[in-house]
Length: 243
Image 1 (cartoon, rainbow, N blue to C red):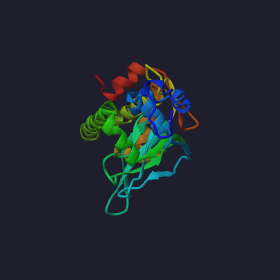
Image 2 (image 1 turned 30 degrees about the horizontal axis):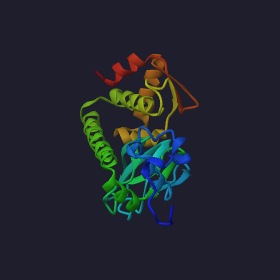
Image 3 (image 1 turned 180 degrees about the vertical axis):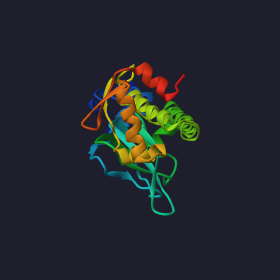
Image 4 (image 1 turned 45 degrees about the vertical axis):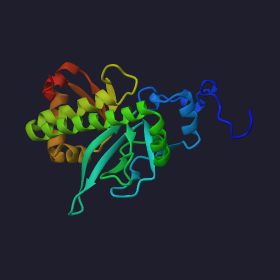
């Protein structure tokens, strides 16, 4: 084959980086052919982002986007008085960043140590033109995030403090394990108590009091202040006011 001649897409093997990716099938890359994955892999960088490190800043020009492979990312908005409000959490295999836009309206920070597979936004946008199914997945995630934001508005506006804390614990249990079909029985809280309070619109004291109440009711067990074991999932769902 002469140099510059395109290869038959059927002869292209999936890159080894993609074959071993635990988030590929459920993430946006699951919509790509081996040829498209091979093209994307030329620009791909895998990296570990330490807990507390910023991935991108609010209103910053965003040249790179990423697939979240593991860990939890918190999205925040800066208020006019300098305070930050956590507005959402992201879990693997969520897409981190905003394609088709030069800037983002939120900042993204690693709530835990996270692993990401990142690539230039321009490359993703170019590839989306030739892979409509990937663009469809991006739109689907955007709509899912919109639905989740509406649900969270209801949680903050209508649910009691006890229901908010139980809803938060249920959210982590349902999303922390990428491969699990059922909510996780054990997990480490990805946020400190102050951040949980911020996310739930409560005080730190109220969050601690409600966690203690769930622990005394033997719905959960807590070790070292961060490690949670769900002892009674049905009771946790009931406490969250879930259907």
